[in-house]
Length: 175
Image (cartoon, rainbow, N blue to C red; front, side, top):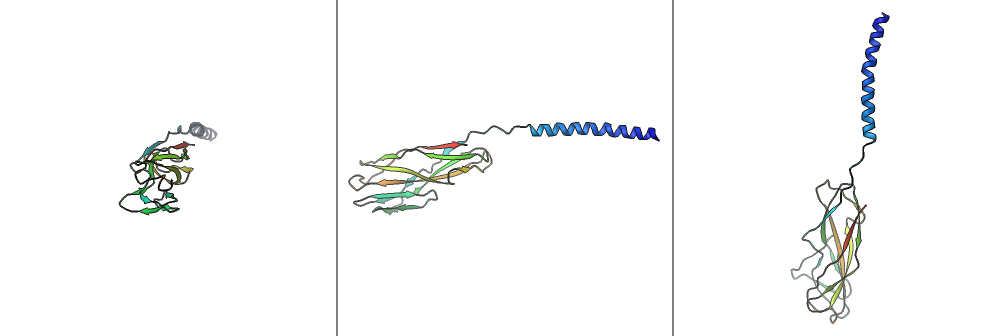
């Protein structure tokens, strides 16, 4: 009887010992695994560029603001007009790993020259989602970002009617 018990005990050790080694190997592989390196973000400017629509102004001027949500407002003696001219924030598409934190750094104010002389100042505004934000879409699906802005218009002599356009800088910082 002692012989049978010793044989049974020996088989148990033979089975448990490889299982313990296998388990320790799996645990050590999991505990020492590294996460994937960060993927650089890809930013695409879509066809929807920051546009302020049509407006007119009087003797003192003012501002026109387009919010990242798409609403438009004015200050001073600036009157917002329809006339079929659209207004909307810039739409960016950002592709990156989910969980990547992005901060936005707006460049300096931009000076936009007019088609009939004069110039207006563009100040880049807030964003939706607000900076900093976390990418949530699974790669390679894009995350959408809207950025608004404000133009400052002088009096009618400084800013004659016409089209004003130019470029501005926005920097995306991947954290």
